[in-house]
Image 1 (cartoon, rainbow, N blue to C red):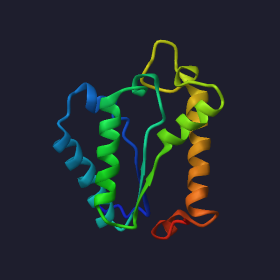
Image 2: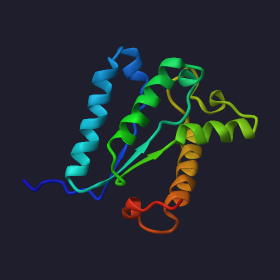
Image 3: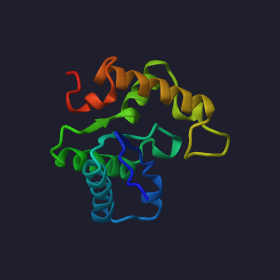
Image 4: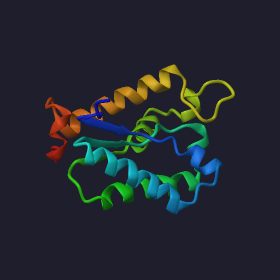
Length: 147
């Protein structure tokens, strides 16, 4: 069996399951670190993409704590091949600027997931985040993101 040799690995955890299951911070950090290390050892550029905002994550201190743990773990790796993309923050800013809320993009009765238009909006914002970081260059240029 051939080993996978990915060029890019995108890590994007929803974080809410970790909160619901009361995953200890040390275990959460170890899991993130392990996935990053495995990806780097395979020679991949690693993009850590935060989840889009959903109703359940709004004003949720635990969500913010886990998000900060994820960001700090990525930074602590000390590798230019690990790129943090704050989609959650960017989408919250977009929603606020347009007088919208995560609830406007939720499936009825589902506080954990965006609906189809919410996923589409998150994808558009991610596209612009990637263009802002890498321009029109291939993402393999992650080692040298644009300032």
